[in-house]
Image (cartoon, rainbow, N blue to C red; front, side, top):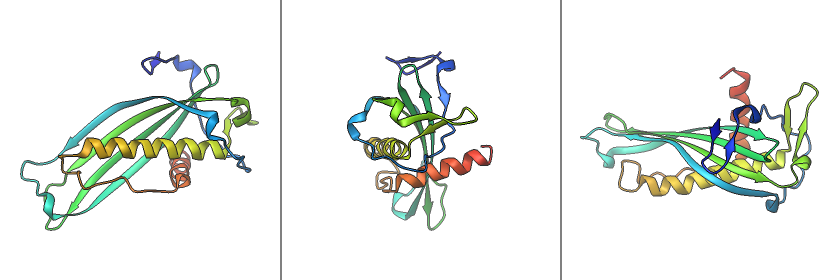
Length: 178
């Protein structure tokens, strides 16, 4: 059984959502979404003892997003993995960080936002996908700002992005079989 702590999600009840974004994005009301839990599934940072923060030129973040839907419980889980690596000049052993977050949302009026496609796939309204991606990513940004204080990543803030970019990367990775 997959568990979120307070919310037990039987594995067979969770559907990995091979989302097809609806052609029409309905205006998604924020009141239809309630974040009920945030979990840090994995967290690690690594830097060499001789790491010099002053010669870091850039931080290179990479993000991936997955969605899982439990129709019986009306729960949507998003998994967000974020990795960051420093880029220094002159070159030094770079620092690396990796965080995997799970965000759990209760979706009110779920029949409005979820539909079954002809092949049995779950179709999620584009407005809901955008809202969940934006809230998950922004919440992770705040957590990381706090977690990175006093580390090689203390000057890094996860950049503001268009949530559609996260959703588009997700689609591309699925078509590549990742």
